[in-house]
Length: 329
Image (tube, rainbow, N blue to C red; front, side, top):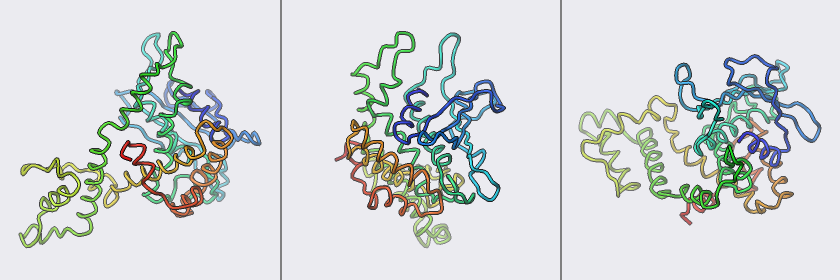
């Protein structure tokens, strides 16, 4: 999987990822260290640690990217270093890590975050890489990378039987693509419901009046928003989902849950730029990949995300590509 993903990075962004195990101290034998080189000039431009496997006894669940060293002219740091952490299936006995498709998607997702940190050209630390990027666009490069998990050449670059080398059967690949759009409309309604509910609670709901019975209660607001976005699945009278909607109270997404869906719009539209030139047209794919690198992955938080996107796409994002990718148009 790593070879396939690194081949994609070379194809899109003209970089070479080389294993550099043993050159830096690591915190566990599973952890690997890699260096990224610009293929145009051979320069070492970034590095990253990859901690790929689950260790329930001493490692929390989930997956994340974090910065180890950020690019900063002020402290003379020109080679950013990232941590890419996943909780994939570990090797068992003589068997290598046999990743699920979701684990592959997660690896591509976190790599997208890492690329924005590592390929930055911004030299001011506070806005280099992932620093200072507005919440709306944080997930753009990560969700963009997930799209390549459904690109035939990319998938067949790594989807082989670990013993026989037999490629993934065509019918399995088709099922992978079909499952992506299963219940896509329901999921879209669900995310729009959560996003609007979050925004309504933080902008229009009056908790004092609600508690006194002089205005709408928090549950009235919930049902009102639900009636617009999920009328097919209205909350029961006893529903207390809001008590566990941690994202918008303690999870950092207060008045920001909409960004999940907005990032999907932006990432799908960005991937559509490659579709527009033809995914089989290598020269054009490299050309668009270079532009993506020079804008989305390079400019950091010093340029507003909308301006970055317009520099890449030549216009503001539209939901057309997302609707098409989800089988809704």
